Image (tube, rainbow, N blue to C red; front, side, top):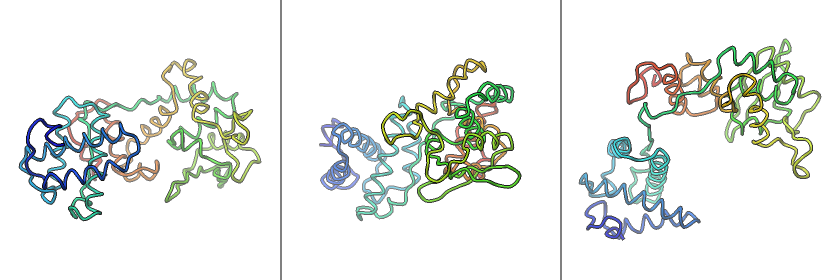
Length: 305
C-alpha cells in the first residue's frame, strides 16, 4: 500500500505491516469513505516525511520532529484548510497509538499548526463611532439591540448567544446585569455596562427559567422557538449599510470586543472568552496584525508570558 502511494519502497517507521495496520485501524473509525481516504493520505504524507529524515520507528518520534513537520507546511504550497486537517489527523493518530501501546510517548506529543503571521487574517472590528451609530440605529428593534449589546459586551459567538436562556441574565447591584455562559465543563459570567444592561433587561422582561432568551416568532417548527443562527446573523447584518459597514456580521462584534481588550494578556482574554490560552494568543497576534505593528514568524513574546 505504501509503495502505491509513494511510488517507491518505503523504509523505516516501524515495519510496514504494523504501520499499515495502525493506519487502517485508525481510519476505520470514520464512517465516510472520503474522510477515511483523506486521513489515510495525510498519515502517509507524514510517514514519508519521517522516512526522508531517517526516522526508523514510531518510538523515535519526538515533539521537536513533529514541530519540524508542521512548520514545513509554511514552506510548501499547502492551503490552510489542508494544513489544519493534516495537523488534526496526526494529533488524533499519535494520541491513539499512545493509548493502544504502539508507542507510549506519542500520546503526550502536542500537534499545533501556526500559520505564518503574514498569512493570518487581521481582526475586523468597529471603531467607537461605528459602535455608537449601530446602537442608535438598532434601538427600535429590542431583540436585535439586545443581541448587539451582548455580542459587543461579552465577545460571545453566535452559537453562545443562541444558547442563552432567560435565566442566564443575572441581576446584579445598581441595575447591572451579568451574562452567564455555560460550557461543557465550566461556566463564566461577564458583567455588562449600565446601558447594555438596560437594553438586555428590557428585552428579557419577566421571562425566566430555561425559556430561550432569543426567540423567533412565529416558530419555524412547533416547539422550536429558539432563534437560529441565521436569525441572529440577519438581526445584525441588516444595520451594516446604516453605519457604513456592509461587511457587518456577528463575528465583527466579537472581534470588536477583543480589539477593545488588546491590553489583556492571553490568560485574561481566555477567561473572558471561555477559550484556551493558546487560542487567546492567536487572537492577540491577529490584533497585532490589525495595528500593522512589526511582525515575526512566531507568536510575539508578550503573549507567551
